[in-house]
Amino acid sequence: MRSAFLILSLSCVAAFCTDSPPPRGPLVDIVLRDGSSYQCMLLQMHEGRMEVVMGDGERRSSELQDVRAIKFLPVPKAPQNPRPEPPEKQPAPDPRPPEKAFDDPEEPAEPEHPRGGLTPEEMIRLRQLNQKDRDGRISAAEAEELKKLRERGPILPKLGKVKIADENARLEASKGRIENYINTLQSRLKNADTDDDVKDAMLALGMAYRQKSIPGNKIGEMLRADAETIIDPKVRERAKERTQELADFLKNYRGR
Image (cartoon, rainbow, N blue to C red; front, side, top):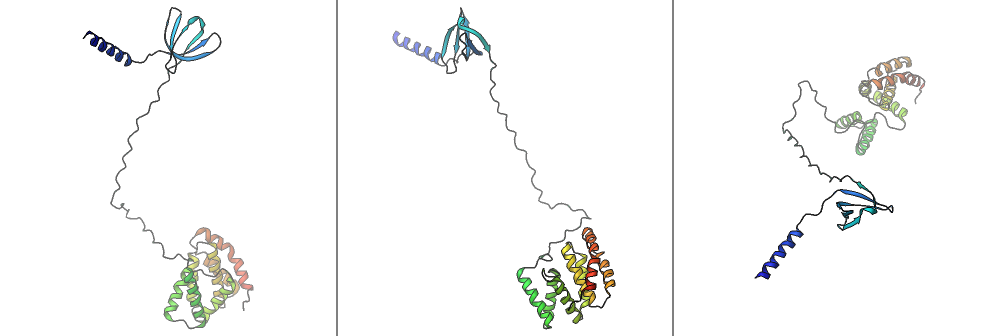
């Protein structure tokens, strides 16, 4: 019975020792007289000796007479992990459409095909209808289709612009449509937003004015008046600078 009590008592003592907290002390840098040094935790100094704990947990006891200096080191602070802030709540989207001021202009709808942006199939159709129109075998429905394609298509092709502009003007004059042709070109020039469109429209207009037997100097005045109608101010100024050059060219142009 007494033996059992003794075993139980020793077990309790062992458990208490095992669960005891680890030794604590200041962190120091020990410099020995031979010049070497090491860092450790200083537990105590007593009667010419010191007791330390190394980084791996090993306890050491050394003579103070072997120590040249003891430097106390700052205790490193444990990194603090800041608590993440909760994400801001985004307001729920308003299902209602935004209110519109009474004077806000409506945005114009994008055209299905922008001007000058005919599809390859439409360009082929435009050439076919142009040929039919020249041959005089175009129907009324085809003539309306041709008109719409011309309004959206390029004013003149990339190659042979002067020849084509002359031929188109002669064709429209021969069919008695020169006034309508001029009105269409003036509208295209007014809304032109590139220098190339301006050059094509003014060249075509100059050729159309020639078919009305207008003198060369008068054509220059008419082209300058047409250039003044261009809406885009920068394009308009550049067009006005080129009207005299075009007028001189048309004055000396003999055609066929």
